[in-house]
Length: 498
Ligand code: AMP
Image (cartoon, rainbow, N blue to C red; front, side, top):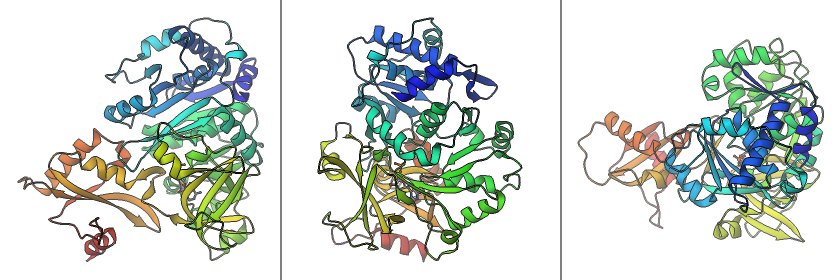
């Protein structure tokens, strides 16, 4: 794997790989620690090809465990601390890891605690032999995303998928240089973090880490940005929305900035325009890609014409190794300009969800020896330029997090005294800004609405990541139903508005 070769190459220098708080990790340390973790895995689980589950947030140990897993010929499953232990257990049942690293030391599953890990990572050892590294068809990582049934689904990405991603994204990332500085703010359980871990580290840059405390505290975030003097920015538009609220977010804060790349959710014209004023001359790129097709598969620099046109901003052109097709409900390609489901074909498409043949049959397909993925995104394409128009299902993006509304509903149904639940996304400027849950109780609870909401949120927090807990909980006596007996969400929304 190219990233592993690059780590060894940069380890020859004394360059800093990652900064987190007051701590730094050099390329040499990162490379040595990943070798040490590989040696541990080979000894602890010699015959296993099962992945390593890593539960934590942005700790400096995590990348060493990830690259060490790859060096030992197996993948990893990063799970962020925003996932409660119940959800981690579900993931562990699916992924059947050979080892669990728990940087919080709170899981009830057998795990390596931070102190044990520290000892393992600092053991002197010989470099892991290249023969044992993960092969192109081996699974490099499994990312668990929100699943409509209420249990997360694991997207498997191979070393070959990552190599294809690296080749496809080059036009946007080849300008990144050794000595450059890259913001490392995306949770490792979301695939956009691959841009930092594989693309920025693979080019000898320094990652400047902003953890969730910093992301929730603009003062801390701006201190990091000031020190980092970033050369390359990759984030969701949500983070930039937060940053532009401060006048300090401008060229003077990042005088070396080479590019602003956004992905993961709609980039509004308003934000793009504000950024062109704050960072004159810095290209703004809108890029797009589902986890299932490895990070990003389309992108384009936003031009003046795009910013001035009536249409929303495009999500760009398909990368050179990806074919984008707009298809009708029958799966056949539509005429140019017609709106339909975006289907993606090429070497970045995942082999599928772990252990979910039912979902795989619906979402993935083969075409002329190439693998394809039905994105569920309603799009339109003109002269190769793709416009995102919305979702064809109940998946939303909330502050950049992918959420299936049914996932929240199915977990709400597990909360005590809830007979049925429906969740709506509150929209602002075409963007989901919060969730509201409507719940029908099994029996009167005698609680006030505030007390009830607090109790429900607390119970739900034990089942789903914090970003999936609705902001508002409203008890209703009944739900409007459609002819199939399902909750009629359109009517529910309309009733709510009256
Ligand atoms: P994820 O798997 O978390 O990366 O989420 C993928 C989904 O995010 C896509 O299927 C889209 O619905 C949405 N998405 C990603 N990038 C963009 C973008 N640039 N504009 C609009 N939606 C996006």
